[in-house]
Length: 118
Image (cartoon, rainbow, N blue to C red; front, side, top):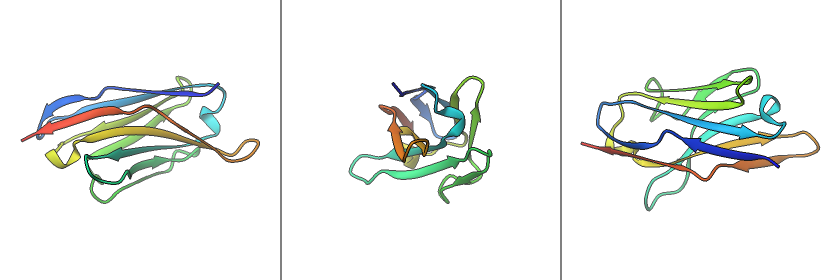
């Protein structure tokens, strides 16, 4: 059974940093494209960052240059390093694994809250 468990969220001041982690259980990590999404109150969920199986990354314009996504295949953990946080980064952050072995499968974590105050 595949499970994704986020951690590292919290409350910080604007300009500070946080690092989110997402531990993935189950034999899918190294073959999955991995994503971070976020959902702010009253808004739709949005894609924040992506890292493919090759390690290639992409980011939403709003976080480009401030956030860094990475993966550790040995630890089966996805990370999101968030620097220069701003109040508009306040949201619940979700990790997501997209895997195509045996057909397309999408797995989601339960989310971790990030709150940034000015």
